[in-house]
Amino acid sequence: MYAAVVRSFDSSPKYEEVESPVPSGEHEALVDVLAAGLHLRVRAQANGSHYTSTDELPLIPGIDGVGRLPDGKLVYFVATDTALGTFADQTIVDLRRAVPLPAYADPVLIAAAMNPAMSAWVTLRRRVQAKPGFKVLILGATGNSGQMAVQIAKLMGASQIIAAGRNPERLRSLTQLGADVTLSLAGDPAAVARNLGEAAADADIVLDYLWGEPAAQAMLPILTRRSDRSRLLTWIQIGSVAGADAPIPSAALRSANFQIIGSGQGSVTPAGYLAEFPALIQAVADGKLTANPVVYPLSRIEEVWKTPADSQQRIVFVPHNK
Image 1 (cartoon, rainbow, N blue to C red):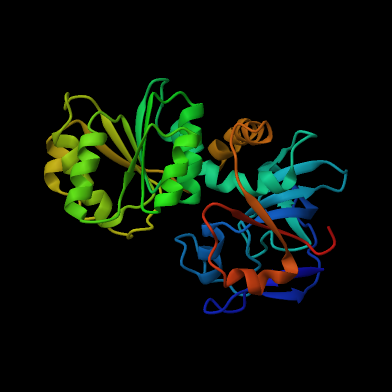
Image 2 (cartoon, rainbow, N blue to C red; image 1 turned 180 degrees about the horizontal axis):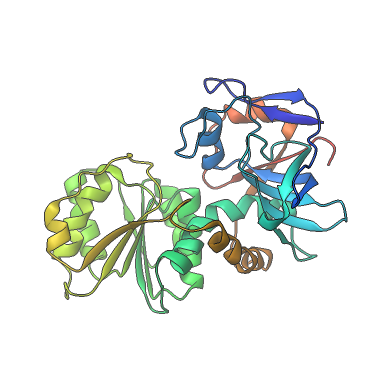
C-alpha cells in the first residue's frame, strides 16, 4: 500500500510504498481509508511538537478519518495510539474508537469537519454544562476550530456569541454563521483588551483558542466590567496559537467568580469523546454544521504540506485508489 511517512520531524511527510498493516488485537480491524483531514493537530503530530508526541519515528501521520470496514460498513474512527496514522491506503482501527456513519453522510465532509468541531462540541457538553441562553466569547474565532465553535454555540442555544479574531474578511463572514458581535484582535493590545471588556462583560463562557498575551490582557477588562461579579465566568483554554504560556494577573482570580479550566486530550476521557461522536456526526451529516473541504490525492502530500492552509477550507486527503 501507499502512505505518507514522516522520517524526520524537520521535513515534510513523503509518499512511499510500505507494507500493509496486520490487525493483531481482539478489537482491531483493517480499514480502507476513504478520507482523512489535514488538521493543525496532524501538523503538530508530524513535527513532534504536540504534547502527546512520543518522538517515535518513522510514523504515518493522521489522527482520524473515514473508512470502510471489511464487512462494508462506513465508519468515522480515531486512530490508535501508535505511529500508524490515517494518511494511508489502509490502517488499523480499534473498533471501540469507531462510529458508524449514516448512509447519506459524505465521507469527505465528515473527515473535514469532525476534528475542528470536536473541541467546542466536547467542551460545551463535557467540560461545562452550557445551558440554553448562555453567552459566549470565542477568542480565535477566525481559525478553523473557532469558526466551528461559532456554529456549535448557536446550535446549542447561545443567546449571544461574541467572535474575536484577526482576519477581517473571515471575521465579517462569522455573522452568517451565527455571531452576534465581531471584534478585531488587530491593533493596540490595550485597546483590544478594552473592547473585549466592553463586549464580553456579561459572558458566561470564554472559548479560548489563543491563550498567551491576548488571553492574559483580556481577563481583567472583562471581569472588572461585569454587572454582577458573583456570576460565574468560566474561561476554557483549548488552543495556544498566540503562546503556550499566559501571565495570568492574580487579581483576576480574586476580583470575580472566575475559573480557568482546559479542554483537550486528558481532560476528557476517550469514552467521553466517543459518546459525543454520534450526535456530532449527525449534525455534520444533516448540514447543521458546515465546512469547506478541498480534496487532494494523498500522492500530493509533499506539495500540499508546504502550502499554508486557508482557514476557510479544510484539506482532506483521499488515497490514490479511491
